[in-house]
Length: 131
Image (cartoon, rainbow, N blue to C red; front, side, top):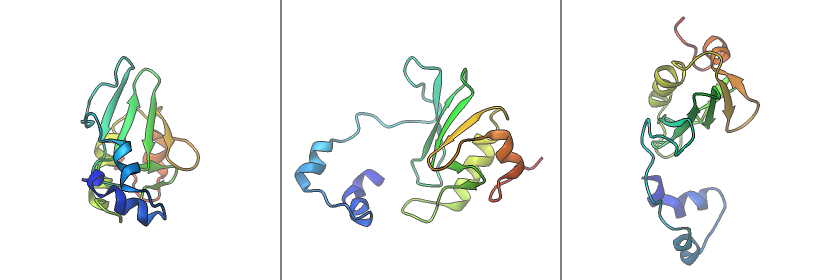
């Protein structure tokens, strides 16, 4: 869905690309799906809608590392008020997908300092886990 609105999204961010430049970007070869393996790495895709409909995090089990993008921040969560966002879906994604990971998982956020799943479950001012 968001892919179809790329020109509009770029304008919202103050960026203008010609039709030729947008065409040169090309369409995605494939869409990521929940639990999809990340090639030969020990990682999997975790579909986490809420910030946007297609938001995903990438979890690397052996490294106990989560690349959370704009889904989860240290003490906060990503915006859910833009195209395709949903506060209810964001909360569901965090509580039922991310907070089920081990407490020792390091979270690399899309903005700001890294954090740990256990820390966020206990201290996140937006979404605390039911302990």
